[in-house]
Image (cartoon, rainbow, N blue to C red; front, top):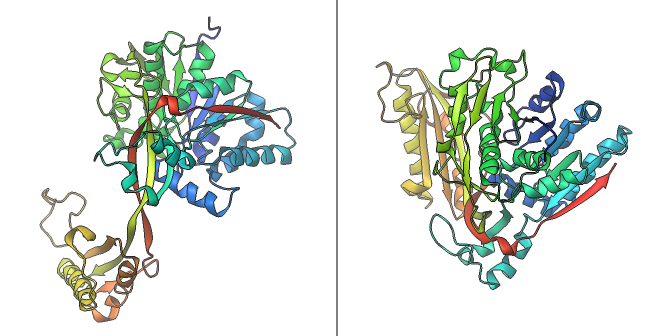
Length: 457
């Protein structure tokens, strides 16, 4: 039976690039049992895989190491446990970097665990030979159709390996790819002894994790009624207060900015939801329709009633592959008739490229006139006046890198060989970039095994 009446878990990172102040402030602004950090997106895995191919000591979220370096003494003193998917495609290298930080700080006796098993990039041929076609969930095409261009493949693991790591005494748990809610569900399983068949409890933890997975997005960030949010600059990151029976509260540290109420929580709850009655995860399927949300005021929302059902017999797999090349650039065009001049500039670029045999189809090219209602095309503009300045954005994509490269030479000349008012060219000549495409697939769970290793500083 669980001994704790409540476990406090905060998520301080919604993506790699989120404010490093989030986790630092969470550690300093109030009490916590657990700090979770979500760094990974689908394209991130491919980027990390490429980094590792160039240097076997890389392939993880370096921001995590810097953050730990800044708050390590406080984490140790307060006995805050940290769970992060910062391992990317190289959790062991991330572990080495964390242990190095601890050695420099002369911190001894702290256990760091690594969860492995999500990275199946090196097993793809073995798995397809065993009958796993890894068909694209959107198109139905087999992975063999893009196999030569695959750059990463990672399984979305569940929360039980995280709980296993915590049971082995780890204060810091580093994982690769897993579900975002699993980062907070793992500590709940560990603390309360929840079992694989406790589907309602696992659903509660999954829903709680989903609510906080994007950080401040549930405490006032990206909120429709943004004027009502006080001190957004110092918005408090969200905290879960979970109880053993699966009832929980969403709150934040006292005295911080931001806002938590029923509406801010609902805004995040419907984010990337899919079927609300069957939110599929590796450990359970959660029914979002089953819960009730009660606004208790003072930045506190109570959630109860979660219902769950058994998980599927497959894991979702995130696969990335090379899908061609792209380049984009922009110019600012000002003065009278700015929009008309921007349209002429775009026409000039396409005609000059056609002269050299570099014609792009409508699907292969992008034209945007920022300032002329491009973000909400089709809706009425708030005023009838022509804009006095427009940012012209041009972009191209395709399988022929040389053709994309040729495009990059045509924006700068418009400063002197286009209509008047072409200015604001910044960032240099556009750069050709690889297009990394996402290939979602399913894999039988019996083809995946996990491993937890624990190291001591």
